[in-house]
Image (cartoon, rainbow, N blue to C red; front, top):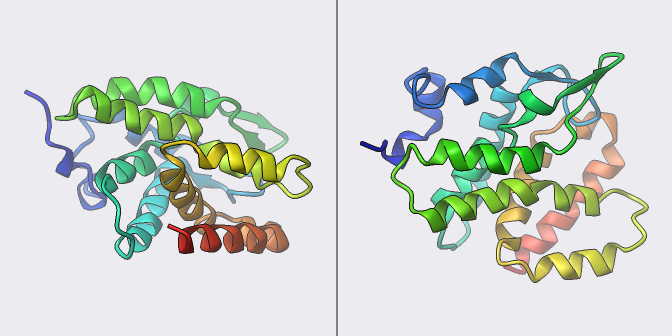
Amino acid sequence: MKAKTPLLNKRNIKAGKLADLIPEFYDLKNVVENNHWHNHENVFDHSLSVLENLEKMINKIKMRRKNLLKIAALFHDIAKKETIVIQNDFTICPKHEDVGAAKVRGILKRFDLGLNEIEFVASIVKSHGLIHAILTPGKNNFAKEIARLRKKKIYRELILLSYADTIGSYLKKTKPAEFKYRIDFYKQEVKNF
């Protein structure tokens, strides 16, 4: 019997009620990142923080697949355990989006989701780094890349997830001008929804 997706909430996860069902998520407590975005922060806490930020935002926005977006937010960094590289106390997680998309497909088969819903979540997990990469200051093809991304069916979801991810980042302290640039962009995009 498959688990019900409403179980996938912050309260149940923090209480440890899903440790047997999604042990991969609880493993993220031991994956600690340190870079411009994270200050010795474990991925478990970061993911819950992103979910919390997202929930505050999407309550005000009319959209169809809010629950699937919440699931994507929860699992957006699920593959950082497999991809983390530590260099002089500085961490990176190359290709965690691609690895995460494959991993989340397997995890979500344990829940009462259809194949289209699983693929929707996996596509968000796979693409969630695109906005971050495009918004890197000094990007030459910004207008062209953002126009191409706006054509994706999941563009709204990517904006909201990236916005929630940025709000909870350490970027505000390490690179305040970049933080402001990103937040201003997200606010403008959300206004256009």
